[in-house]
Amino acid sequence: MQPPSRRTFLALGLITLTTACTGTDGTDAATKAPAPDPDAPVRLRAVAATDTLLSAYDALLGTPGARTALLQPLRAETAQHRAALAQGIPAGSGTPTPGAPTTAPSTSAALATLERQTAQSHLADLDAARPPLARLLASIAAANALHATTLGAPPDQPDPATTPIPSPSATAPSATSPGTALPALQQALSAEHAAVYGYGVVGAHLPDDQQRADARTYYAAHQAQRDAWQRLLTTLGTTPTPAAGGYQLPFPVTDAPTATKLAAHLETRLTTVYADLVADLPTPHRRTAATALRDCTLRALSLIHI
Image (cartoon, rainbow, N blue to C red; front, side, top):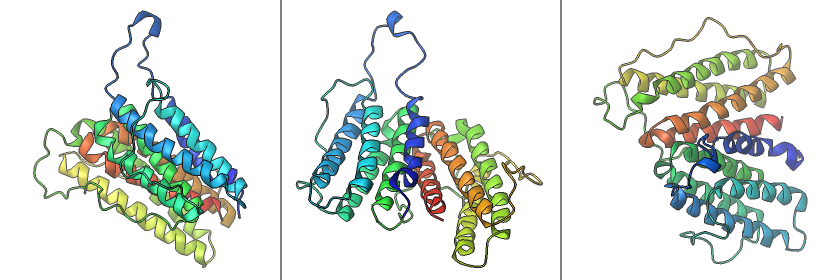
């Protein structure tokens, strides 16, 4: 089993890249009076949900035979999540979390379930948050999903609540369609083109075993996501960016270990692309990008285990 610090590096990385985008608008605080934060209700709900999760970690850590080496790094990351979410709200503020458990989880499996419930509560508030906070919520929800998998839960299934991407025959886009986010959508499509190309290289260097089977599954997932962005862009009346004839690899791929390293690199790069896309898309489509962010995060987790 990989050590927790290795297993959960993506959660830390997601927080590193998101906290820099929240809490300031670039204006010197000394020259501008504080204004009411329209994100305060969302932040309060997210902090309350995270406090419930922190209490669950503390309770489980206090039980005899607790898996301290596993739980402590996850608890520390959760504390980082809370600090990022609490920016700009008074210390000690919070609201009760609807549906919060009345008893603390007594097993890793129960804690994993609570991690997933926390992720869902963050995603439920995506549409109510301004773009920087939406980016943070989606990134932390992906980290929650990673934590749940680390605690032994099976991988997340496709989210039925995700906003479906329309087909080219859909009606004309409304005022809430992602027309203003076309550059970000094109960037996401370009990143998926590169991922599809990269997985073609990956598959050619893997033995015909479970690794190659997993790579085929991931390759198909990126093809599907690429096609979805192409359909959406076409629906919006824009020509999707075509794939390049080839892409420069970040390092030479000559064998199975370097092929696996490339696959992990592709997935990790896409987590940044999709975190940015959550912030750039209007509210009806944020959940789609957040789900793509989660899926890339979990695929990267599976790859670092190889």
